[in-house]
Image 1 (cartoon, rainbow, N blue to C red):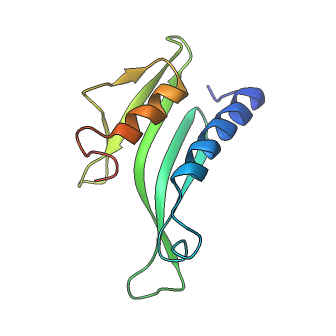
Image 2 (image 1 turned 60 degrees about the vertical axis):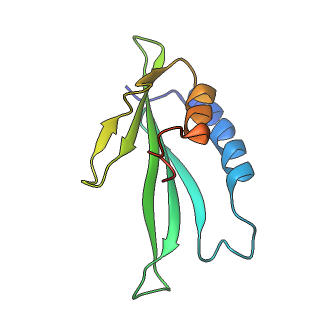
Image 3 (image 1 turned 90 degrees about the vertical axis):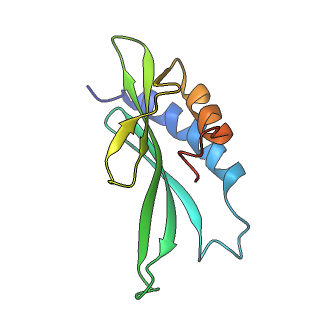
Length: 115
C-alpha cells in the first residue's frame, strides 16, 4: 500500500532537507549531484552524473532505499550491490523512522551507500 498524500509530503520534506545539506557546491552539480524520489511506499536516494560518452544525457546511480512497512510501523533499509539488485542492509535492516534511515546512510559505517 502506498503512502498517503500527507505521509508522502512529509517524507519529501524530510529527505529534501537532507539532500540540500549533502548536495555538492553549485559549480560541481553539472558533473555530480544527488536527488531522491518517493514512489509507492519507498524513498530512494541516488547520484546524478553525465553519461561518459554522452555528457548531455544524465544517468542515475542508486545509493540507498527505504521502504515503509505499515504493519510494522518501520522502514526496511536497502543498498544496491554490484549486481544492481537491492539487498537488505544487514547491519541495520529495519529502522523506526525516516530520520534514522538518513542518519544511517550519512554515517555509512560499512561504505555500502556512498562507497
